[in-house]
Length: 258
Length: 258
Image (cartoon, rainbow over all chains, first blue to last red):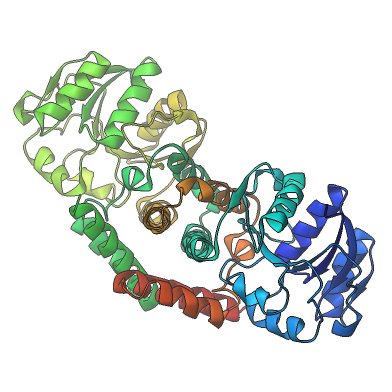
């Protein structure tokens, strides 16, 4: 049973994951981050040792969790002997096989959520997607995930890559459109509060109906008069106009076919 | 006081608005729609008269609500003598002045929400944006709006146009990204349920923090390795790749500046 965990990384995901484990009674052995400030911030919050020196990473642990930027993962792995260790990464777009080169006892522990350090989150509702090199490791990761979440999926590397791409659209890109709408209102002296019920309802609708059925607006019915008025409002912002035209045309094409 | 209302239109908004009024004790005098089937569906639901003949529109009413596609508005107005009537439209992108040509007693009654016929909605949480040609009419519309909603804003035509554009990004375009993500999952045999907690949290975050602060993901930090992997997954879908690249670059540019 996994009871002691070493956390490599101190970003948004690493921070929330470490806090959730700690709360669930899992011992955080140590936090490593390339940046001492980040390692210290998380280590201090948890009241556990921290370091920014790779050679000082504490491997006397049940599980090493690699939660660093994809590009940084290799750097840590190359300088650490993990061959006897159980190791997982938390990355959507990195296959499990990448870890196999360093340790046969490996897997993936991918919580599918958007994490910001300033925002507390209830981990129990977050889907944790796990994958493992053996049935035994899978069972261990499953037991660990069950301590912090009610929803666990076994997802292989190919599926996880698509899931990550889908999440970029459903979260990162969606949030950017919230950002654009907020900027449009701000420039006009209007409050973002005006849009909050709309944003809530737009998300709530797809909990119970398909996004295709939930689609509304001028793009779907290709209301050219409105589309042209909107483009006129963005005359001085070519990049915004380009986004608007591309998405409007895509929505129209998608619904014309139906 | 407005107690009797004639509804021109039987689309998503007209339907939900008429139902909300009816529930609040406002009498729906009649429903008109160009399509007899639509007029009949709404009229029957409400238990009120309906027609698809413009000359038969019942003008013995306190308020005529024009809730048709922008392009169709002129057609109805040209064939109806509204000069003595209080008339409002419900369109985000049409200025109030457009109605002034037909009646000096005019205004705008714009509920800011996404409406689908199949989905029931609590009108009380929907912001109703009103505008009127006189203080007296404004007071009347305010009293009417207060019967169905707790949130009423006075918004002029210029502001409403921007608000509508912002709503297209925050709702229609956002929903389209939900749709894309769902399609990606479906093609891979994965359930859309996987993304629901993420969609909920993405919307919930911007209730309490700015979208810019809430932004996460590979585009923000320009994680080129992930971006290239994602583009490779969409090789066979040029339009999707184009959307991905455009939004990713925009997010990166926006956050690089910060």
